[in-house]
Length: 399
Image 1 (cartoon, one colour):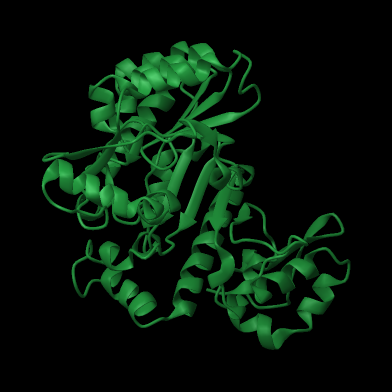
Image 2: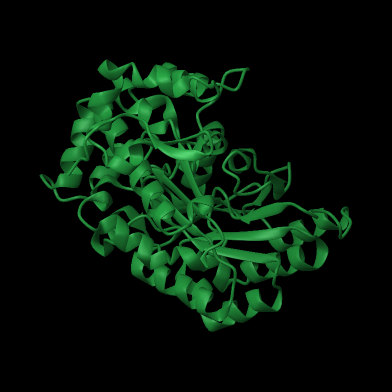
């Protein structure tokens, strides 16, 4: 990224390697490490910019920005702004690990990284990425999940590094669109989507363990063959796991909309959902995406790999029944003490799923169920009962 604006901020007192509570529920990792305080990549949809760490330290970091750059800038105002830790992060990590035994991390996964990108160009060029990974490999027993938007991981130097330390590494490149022009405006400073996917394929061809990270997949991607093309590009059969999720607004929807041409379908969708408050439209998109991903995975025998991350509080009643077969689904909104969703429509489905007579009762409730199901492919209507798949409703095949 050109014209980098680097601000040095104090290092976290709690340490670099910490439990990754947010990623545990997603089955991505148990621990995380972030070498930056604010990512070098300026993805407009990223939740990190509105997270607790930057929010709590906002006044302090704004003062440091003014002192070091001569102007008061907030992360939401300039995607070229980056917060780097004071001092040597490699030396800090070395000190932290000296208090741990080599067995630390056995059976656990550490993500590199969670709130920032451990392969940010500055970290790579300064040697911090390599130094940190060397320490983690030599001094811990974590399995290391590399999560990045930098295609450099597919270059020969890094491929050889990952292979030399197999099976310690699993590598993924987050990609939710194939639109280079859109990515240039919204995923600022990152490698292009096609460069990321080319790196993923290079890793796979070399024998490095990989995973798919289609997070988030935007509404315009599921039009036409966009979704199929994206899935084809990550080559599901050669991935260990595939994560996917719809876009979730983190108070940044207008920034994301600005990446689309005004009046385009993408622009209109964001206007309709967030400016005009059409919650049902978001619910339809999130549900259609899940159904499409599940059907594709099922057809190719890859359903066990799918992890669809859904913050389900936005799902409306007419779409809730599409989650009666929740294979591949991982609900992410906070649950009740009993483990049920706080979304009453999803909870009703959850309560029904575990009861022997569920499908009889569902089938009798045509007034709620039938309109939603008629808009979906016939295969969605199949349910597992008495050891075999049976039609949920005696509906005619949809076109």
